[in-house]
Image (cartoon, rainbow, N blue to C red; front, side):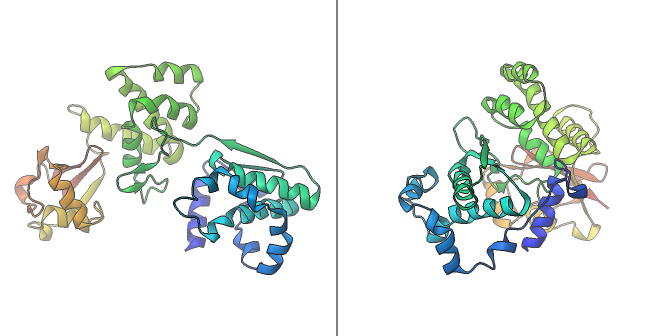
Length: 313
């Protein structure tokens, strides 16, 4: 499972980092952590860590009341050791990460200084948070995935198209390569005009992650859904057969993987969040009938952001 995840992560990172001819290296720290002798590790590495200082670190202080496992307490030692190994193996002298990793990264810097008498460095980037200070990238159903199999380019585009007005400028600044003058201009738009900035944000990020072709399709699909007389060909589609007519709408959407569970569908119906051809679905067992189809397809809307065509084949 881990090997599969590593391969998928590498595929995603290849859009930003050149791994050809050893220009970048992806290492699995299991290669040096799994073979460690616990006693040797605690004696050789643990001896360089002060428990008092570790407890003063922000990442541990915030967990003391809610509960901190001994395994989590060891993360600092293991991450520091990772930096030491990479320093010895490749001459790696800088670790980069989110600013919530600052204490763990400094631990590696100091470990290298103590063990190797060498200078090393840490560089953090700000975490992507919303206007309320909470980490972004989470929706009601879970994470926003880079993998198109988990979050389709259309869903990905719609996520950024629907971010809060207050978060648009920050997202443009941190996640796109637009000139900062343009970022500030877009971020200053107000009222209905901020939607133009959101369209730029959604397109630019989707283009980086999924490529220009998929970004254009997602943009076209969004315009089709919210505009008049547009081409609906790029709206994500699921196909059903004649034999599936009469199946309940929620059962069908779960079967096609559009919804994860029937309980999710029931909850959506109860909250008036499921529509077929712009009509609210009142009964989660509502059958899919031929009358719903126009030109062999009908439109399903789930919440504010997810749209699918159901196509009769």
